[in-house]
Length: 213
Ligand SMILES: O=C(O)c1ccccc1NCC(=O)[C@H](O)[C@H](O)COP(=O)(O)O
Image (cartoon, rainbow, N blue to C red; front, side):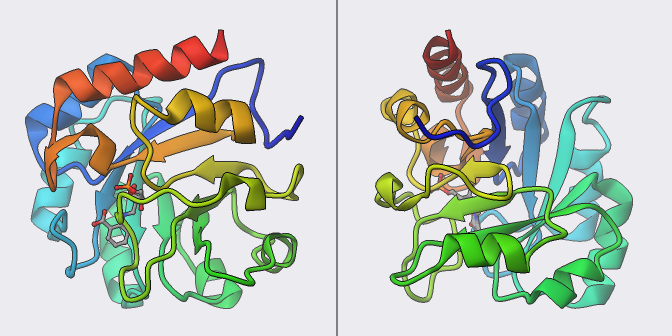
């Protein structure tokens, strides 16, 4: 059985790509452990610093505010960090780039052919976790696509956050197959890009809790 850091059957849940205050409140009320805010201007879910502040500053203690960057200008990271607990690097950032971050960080790895996850886990030694996402050329994230979960080794040197095409319909199967530390979802809890759906968020959390039981 794979083991990627699940603690006593409680898989952590990160909702990513929130853009509206009501969605933040609903996500918190539903029981999300972490909320992701996209700071990459190319995304349909992108926030500027003013909108980030408005959303992040309404998140209560003990819910982790994650800022998502793709090969960012360090100045943007520095300014956004005031509103964030954790940084998620989703581009081609090197281990040294990540290590210069002003907050704890995780590294997203897109599962392109030939990716050596064990080597990546060693290379990104300062990461608090690795987020594993689907690979589609030219699209840095939020693809809504799954990848072959059997490519994840049974153990890795870092906690695994499983992402890519998850929804209430498949997250239990994903948890059973991978036993990740956490799951991350964006498109699977939306009615349209950036518009989270309270019912889909609640259904996703229910499916995770049932899988943990
Ligand atoms: O969400 C985006 O638009 C995005 C853009 C560029 C890089 C990453 C992006 N999202 C990253 C996430 O954390 C998503 O939650 C992850 O890729 C999974 O997305 P989905 O397959 O839609 O659940």
